[in-house]
Length: 218
Image 1 (cartoon, rainbow, N blue to C red):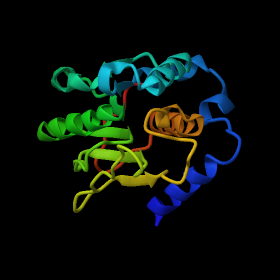
Image 2 (spheres, helix red, strand yellow):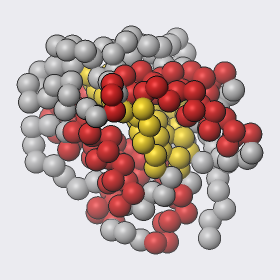
Image 3 (cartoon, helix red, strand yellow):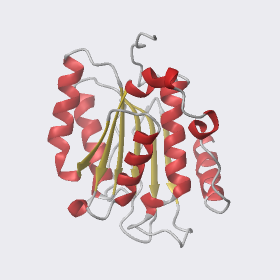
Image 4 (cartoon, helix red, strand yellow):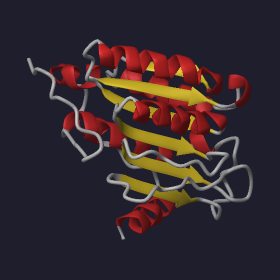
């Protein structure tokens, strides 16, 4: 039920003016810096790295909001991203892992999550914009959202049996103002993603699949 409601609300949101997200409502508070710093956010571009401008936009937005560990990658960087996260985990890094991708970068999001699953490393949030293959999302993902359109390159992601977290395929095929090249630029979708990150890092949302040791608070 919740999955269908999420999809419906997001489609409605595309038809109404953009509302402020949680961060904008609360304003910039340096006392919240610890929460921002306790998140590793990976944004992964698609083919050639020049068409996924929404990834660049969200990276800039998140940095402006105080998130310090925000990095941009290519869809070909699956090995390096996985290696960096695994190495950090082995060295005691318990930061929230957040993966966001567009097009082939969306495929890379799931591929990274699959590799981390083999190392028993949770991914707290994964968001894909027009994933291009029907990839199976592993059970180590706490929250998963796939925005897609079936009138182009987009596909649905596959929810495995017994998935313990939140899983949503959100069909935006009826939104004719969107297409594969600009779906990640939609302000309403970007705001939704920022709100998910805000909830995760500031209200301590934890799922069965994505529990992380609480960091010391100053």
